[in-house]
Image (cartoon, protein in one colour):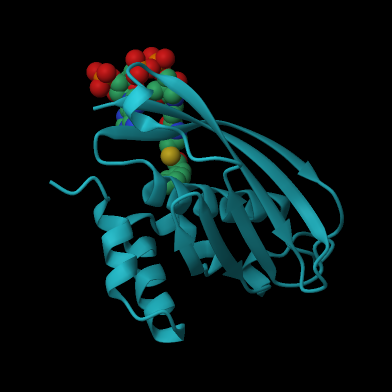
Length: 158
Ligand SMILES: CC(C)(COP(=O)(O)OP(=O)(O)OC[C@H]1O[C@@H](n2cnc3c(N)ncnc32)[C@H](O)[C@@H]1OP(=O)(O)O)[C@@H](O)C(=O)NCCC(=O)NCCSC(=O)Cc1ccccc1
C-alpha cells in the first residue's frame, strides 16, 4: 500500500500548470470551504514544501485596506495543511494545535505563502504523539516577508 496520501497523488496526477493548480485548489476548497475566502492557488507541492498564492481582493480587506491579518493566518493554514498532507504518510495523522504569528509589515498586495520544513522527520520513528512545527513565510509582491507563522501540528501514528 502506498504511504503517499490521496492529496499528494492527486497533485502529481494533475498538470503542473495554471489549469492543474486551479483544479487542485478548487478540490481543496471543496473539502475545506473556509480556505476559499482567500481564493488560494496552490502552485508548488512536494514533501516538506508548499507554496500558495492569494490575490488581494475586497473580501479580505481590513479597515486600512490592507490584507487582513486573520486572512493571512488562513493563508498560512492552507500552506501548512497542504505541506502536511504531502509530507505525513498514511501511517500517521496530523492536526494543527497552535499558531505563533508575527505581522511584520503592512500587506498591501496579493500574497505568497511558503511553508517549508527544515528537514523531513523519519516517520517510522514516530511511535507516539509529537509536535511538528511548520514554519510559514508570507511574502508580498515585492518579496518582503510581511507575515511569519510557526504552526505546531500534532502528529500521531494511526
Ligand atoms: C488533538 C489535540 C491537538 C491534542 O490532544 P491530546 O489529547 O494531547 O492528543 P491525542 O493524540 O490523545 O488525541 C485526542 C483526540 O484528539 C483527536 N485527534 C488527534 N489527532 C487527530 C487528527 N490528526 N485528526 C483528527 N482528530 C485527531 C481525536 O479525537 C483523538 O481521540 P482518539 O485518540 O481518536 O480517540 C487536541 O488539543 C485538539 O484536539 N485540539 C484542537 C485541534 C483543532 O481543532 N485544530 C483545528 C482543526 S484544523 C483547522 O481548523 C484548519 C485546517 C483545516 C484543514 C487543513 C489545515 C488546517
